[in-house]
Amino acid sequence: MELSEEFITASQAAKLTGYNPDYFSSLIRDGKVRGKKMGKSWITTRKEVERFLKNIKKTPRSTWSSHIGLNLKSVIVAFCVAVLLSIACYSVYAAVYNTAWNQVAAVASISTTTASQFQP
Image (cartoon, rainbow, N blue to C red; front, side):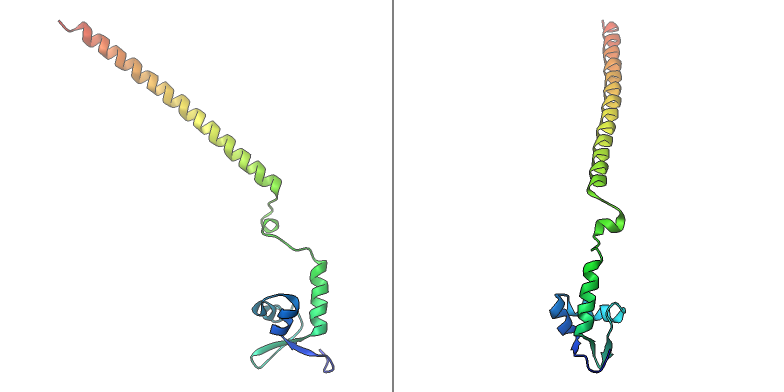
């Protein structure tokens, strides 16, 4: 940063860019925007803010889905798989339940038949 450049605080730079002042200060701390700390304030130049804005527009914005590799197609596929698995599990449950219920009913009918045979 040259002495002839106009210095602005991180808060002023944040107003120019629409960013939060704390976030803009962290950009300076992290070296993404050139600047220095003077006293309690982080300072930079208008030229540096313009350079940052030009570079940020060139890089594509990432979303939460790009970080974990999700897109709409994979979310829909995962949802459909979950629905199909739920249906399959319910079908197996119903088949087992019906089989067990039929066995219980069969045993109950046998026991009532045999009990009625022994009544005087």
